[in-house]
Length: 172
Image (cartoon, rainbow, N blue to C red; front, side):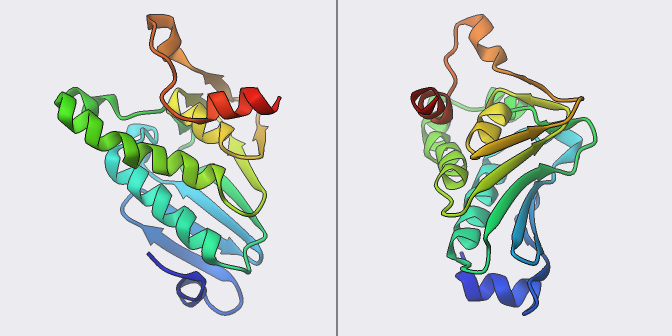
């Protein structure tokens, strides 16, 4: 999906504007800053398969755009950055569906983790499970007073599914 020129055409030569990636992700350009906004407010930005694909595609476009000097991951929801995996979607999955979804979800987290420019997560409200891991994929997390972060899956014996808890613990 898109090279840097495509992103520039979508946002205008002056580096302002926005481009949607699927239904749930929008990238807004503010000069040299690209804002990747999670935009699934009805589900508190729970990461569905479609949203994961969109995050990965948006990251690919931002990585290819040489004019982007910093990326900020944000949310359009007033009470949540991202509540993690879409458990309603996963509840209907067979084991084979889960296996097929795994690389799609991983591509979203590694897409952010491997962006070539500095990345900042602007966290407000809940950042739980995969949502916290998405924030951890960034180089810096800026959290406001409403931020609540956590990995609730560990309380029932499930290890975090994204790569960032292992990567970040190795870098700290």
